[in-house]
Length: 296
Length: 296
Image 1: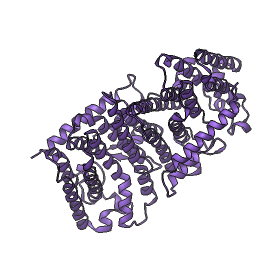
Image 2: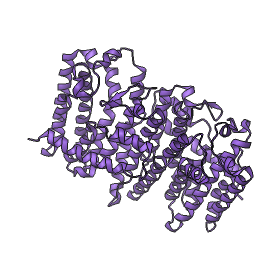
Image 3: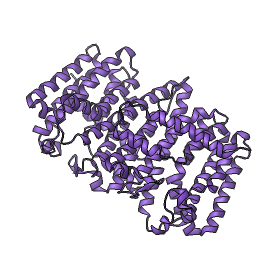
């Protein structure tokens, strides 16, 4: 049996070390780099990077090979948080229990630090030392996957939908499509890019995709549930905010009980998708369960 | 003799056609795509894309092969304008004679449209249909060049320096380094990525670099001069704004006459760098002269 806690701890350490060294590309300290570091090293769950390296392992590869992609995914995720928190967007003052980037610095710095993290993500993906030309095609494919998920056909459109639908009651189908774009797309890209770098066997693509779609949605349903009944101490942020903002969520549309059943069903589907995989998929299986059982 | 006017017109058409088709990746109209299109198709000079295809030709390649990179460069440039114009940054209401993106739409949309253009630039560079694995390595190199120039070691740091040095008198060395970062880096990347895609002969790298550095600076010196004595009708924007904002510029530090001499000297250097090139470098030579002679 895999000890998920120690797996997550060791992967987080590995990712954090790699992120720190990627930020050290400039000797002279400057305000932008300070703001990038502040937000990137603020202690997130690193769920996307961990999914990426776990997918590389499940695909039969060396998880280490996927670390640059894992770092790029966390940079993209962090940039999106910095920009989403801005006064013109969600106007949030706290994130992970700390002042948001524009509160700790200022708006101009936060905008630029977000831009810089997004750019550094692609710079990281394009700066791998290649041992052969086939590898170049793999990294290009990873850039395609991540940019598509992060762009206006994915995450950015999701954020726009989220802003424009505030205060309006969504249908379940609309809510699902919003989340598929806003958080699902990048979670799916985390898994698919890890799988590509791990040397994905092409007849297993659809299984990875099914796993990814199910846990992407399960992640969001659980986020919604935690916003209702989570412990603000443990989460490092306020709860009940969705209700206050009159946001459509799974609990608001389905009720708490049915939302939990739904999250459980999604994890079941995700595990089923990995049925034919060997023990190298154990981390992916354990993460699927963790995603709905987590307390923050 | 090359007819630069018709060269520029035909290259602009080619680039605009390519940009339009790259924006048509979604069927359903949405606000983000509308804002991206509004700013991207607002009729800029397309100087970076034209430099990119001209460099590919000068390097002995087919300019058509560089068009996706040319488009990506214009997307990166446009995203930087959208974000720089934001109220938290330069707070500009007009750009190219039209309301800036956040004035025509709103701040949240402008932030997201900028983010989306930056992301689409990398998606474009990673989505080329490759005929062989060597090509993948070339495109990866182009992504590296552009992301480095656009990121916090280049353009973003330049914008930050620009904001923080407003109102303060800069030395000539500081001004030069600011512009090298803010506009020079992406102009240099336009030329170097075009050269890479055109099949650059490695012993010519330093000549391309020298050309690029000289015209990058000449471009900025001329911008400063136009801000003093340009015709607002022709330029589609106000002049005299640098003086009003008490900005350090070449004319403010050197005087108008010496600034013009300096720009002329830079173009001379750029032309000298291309001395050993054949007639395929004619467009690059003509653009160097155009950069200081332009009226907008």
